[in-house]
Amino acid sequence: MPIRLLHFADLHIGMENYGKLDAQLGISSRVRDFLERLDEVIQYAFDHDADLVVFAGDAFKTRDPDPTQQREFAKRIKQLADKIPVLLLVGNHDIPGMASKATSLDIFRALDVPNVIVGWRDGSQVVQTKRGPVFLAWVPYPIRNRLLAQEEHRGVSIETLDSALQEIIVTMLRDLTTEAADKDMPRVLAGHFSVTGAVFGSERSVMLGRDLAVPKSSLADPVWDYVALGHIHKHQNLTASDSPHPNPPPSGIAPDRGGDSPSPAGGFPAGEGRGGGQTPPVVYSGSLERIDFGEEVEAKGFCWVELERGHTRWEFVKVHSRPFVTIKVDAQEAADPTSAVLARIEGRDLKGAIVRVSVELKSHQEASLREREIEKALREAEVSTIAAISKNVEREVRTALGGVSPETLTPAQLVERYFVSKGKTPEEAAQYAKMAESLFNVE
Image (cartoon, rainbow, N blue to C red; front, side):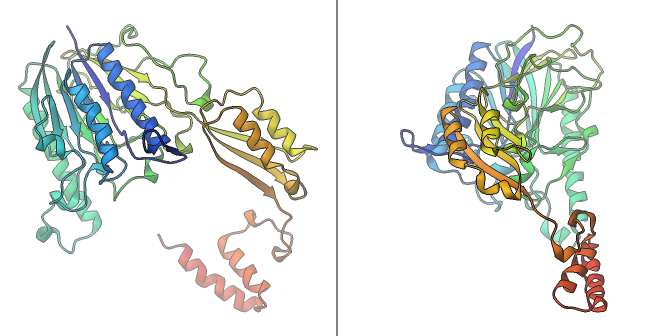
């Protein structure tokens, strides 16, 4: 009988982009969104009788979350751990800069909360579940000042430090793989880091510190039955070409709403089972909520895994993450730009969405755009937040450029024309442009 595992990551409680105060709870409405996604995960685990839950890092937005956020996270993890063993892996957002300070997850370790494993350093454990044992190994986010001896690497280049850190992580993974090979049971590896070949989402905008990529070859070893990753917000299977694929997304999903709908467990496509000796799925579950418009079209959710030694199957389960919607309107040929925007809003399902509107206009139309009417239409559509109403105005070509569009000029040519417009001689302007060009070419 397969062991049922639920894998999720990158919760980022405390992200308040586009939120407003929820007076009843005393928190941002966006923090409430993130907590509600965690509630979905927990309920799914209960409804489908999960044996093990792996959280692959980044519980909070910051390394020092406020007490209310800590309380709300802790009571949910306690609720989960009362029934199911849980791994809480430490991510980069959970780790303070000083090695002597506690991580935001250390409280679970200090209180020795039953059924909760805190992956604050690399380690492993055989976890007994109701359907049998699982060998679980983990590697948290690699922090340079915690792994590298300062005296040994003092004065060396960043590239040398990166190389040394990567070798340390690869050695950790090699040792865990060797240990796993001796275990006659399903084997799971959890990690929180970037992996070569992974496609980044908008997490780069909130990433803390300089990132390091671990070679995929260090993870994609047949010893493992499933590799559960966190850190990158975009859901993806890094061994998709030679390991099981998730179920396809439901048809008929509106792209601008991120394709959110709950997916049931089970019903794996025929032939998805993985035979022994093949590459395991190396999977980023992705984040549970969108943090900005860079994740507008990304589906959000978690992974449901049925573990068997050599025959693991898995699927991606979507959650009801809040939609982000961009409405783009080219109104340059419209007699009434406002009416053109209202027509695009009318009839769209925008209820509960965070919406931004971008309007293309000609310069003579700018004053005629009635933003209050657009805001009124969005409020009537019951949007959650109006993020922005932006006007992209096509300006006349500036005479200082001699009738030439700036997009056709190099940076050096723009500098040269700027100084000519300021009264410099052509020779002086050319000299300034040459000096500026040397700066543009610095890598």
